[in-house]
Image (cartoon, rainbow, N blue to C red; front, side, top):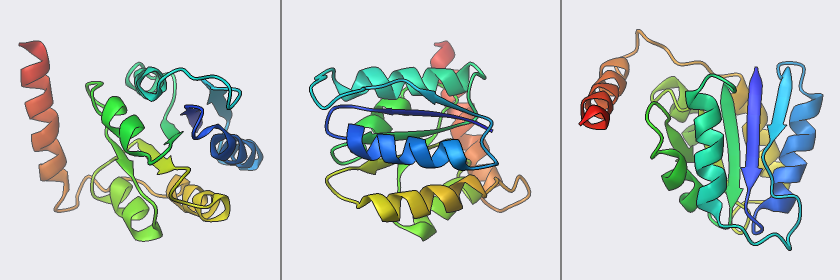
Length: 154
């Protein structure tokens, strides 16, 4: 599994902790770090949310972990890329359902909202989940995908 990580300056320290954890996870074959590299780098979160989502949409990554102050901005940004589903998840159950029910490829965190140990626990769990195409939610995800495809074309 190839995982892209990115953060703005509010999330860089948490992103780095998650990145380092991912590098030790045997399920992860590659970690793609899009930055930022320092709390002094003040580039805006949409740059990173969009860039990470593009990696997934283009097949260059399978999953993504994005961090900003709340997790909301990077999730909104990533969700603008056709074919990508991203969500904020600061608890285990939401992280599980994001994949199993909604086929999300990106999880986002707020560095001002969640501690690093809980974020790392959630990421570790989240990597193990897969979407169930036979679940009752599959039709709902298909409806979203169909809407996106129709409106992205127009």
